[in-house]
Length: 52
Image (cartoon, rainbow, N blue to C red; front, side, top):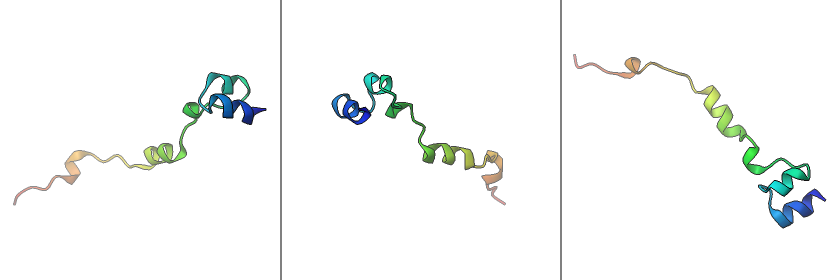
């Protein structure tokens, strides 16, 4: 039944959510979430080269 609703209304529709599915826009993409978590935060002063 869920596939029929997804086919008729789309996977990002309110009807799909009411039938028990998770809307495509409500899902968190793993690649973006892990990429944001694993990037180290460095101060900008470490990367600056001085003319000497």
